[in-house]
Length: 511
Image 1 (tube, rainbow, N blue to C red):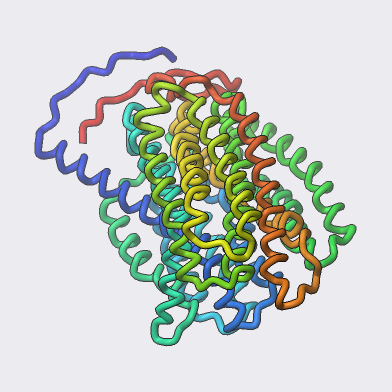
Image 2 (cartoon, one colour; image 1 turned 30 degrees about the vertical axis):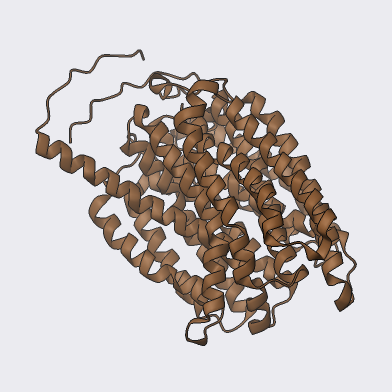
């Protein structure tokens, strides 16, 4: 397929304005839903002490409150994305946001740690229906030449959501609204979810894959089993004493994934409806970006949890003090994210992302130095410089990476690709949360005297930060596989079954 000129027609000004306003309102709705999901992941971390005190949850149960969500989310994302391709992205988005809102209400009403873990798993499963549709709707609603701007906004929302959760959680926990302690961190999703459901029905346009696709039930089962065999032992391993079955499960996932790939290849030849479009991995930008996404997810999975434990449990800070400490981080992420896509990436290409990894690593090293220098007497203002540097580095990565991954993905596979992007990010986060058992808790004795808690947590925190530095070095190396320059609008094409990219005819949008 070659580029073809599309004759332009002059739309009526009123119709063009109304349609343009409609799609930007749709963008606001899906970005709000994405923000709600991201906040919900990090907001829990800041409320951990309150949850433990109120429910009597153990540290392993707390890990499941965060890790269970990530597990269900990661397992369901690929399927959620493909369901949107088949049955309609708007439909799945609305089902997902409705289910997420209901699950949030159940989390807020949980009477014990067991119910909270169960409802968090349900929340992760419904988020897996909602979140893949966000990128799919953006990809199918906006033409290629506008996606850079849109993904820049999306990256800023991602960064802001990831780091504003602790502040929101801190305020809600400190205010102790109606004596509900930690519960408002989940109940706050109800008005937002209901508004998103109503506005989404009105403003989001339906879209699905152009060719008819069938649901790949066998592929769903194989992918789910393989992911479960990796993530469950990592999340549960330390509590169980790293049993043999955990190592066997992780090793056993490799043949399961190999069988999944073989089956998907056969499914592609048979009816062209695989769960995962494997030909996408022959597109360099997609394959490399997925690797970066997975590895960077490990960074965030480790850092945000150990950071919260360090401040609130180790240093004994209140939720509000710990949450407000992250404000410089939030500002730096948002500022760098907005600048990276609009100003820096068009000029410097992948060097911007690599600079982000190096800058973030420099910030982590600064943090290690500050923690060693001031010990348990460290103050929030002394954390500000490393947090600003880390936030700037993160912002240079999270905004451009989505556009880099999706730039050459055909629209008919937007759901599958979006599901894979989110799955790899969540899988990385789940791996990071699992590695907290080694990187953080592994550096402490099982029993710590009360007077030594601060020092023990400081040592464990700096130990975990060295892990973060090491993973960021891997992220930097993987970025050499990304395209040197972002793909232009003409590159956002389709992919033939043999994996060769074709040029997409960009229509003039006439509402």
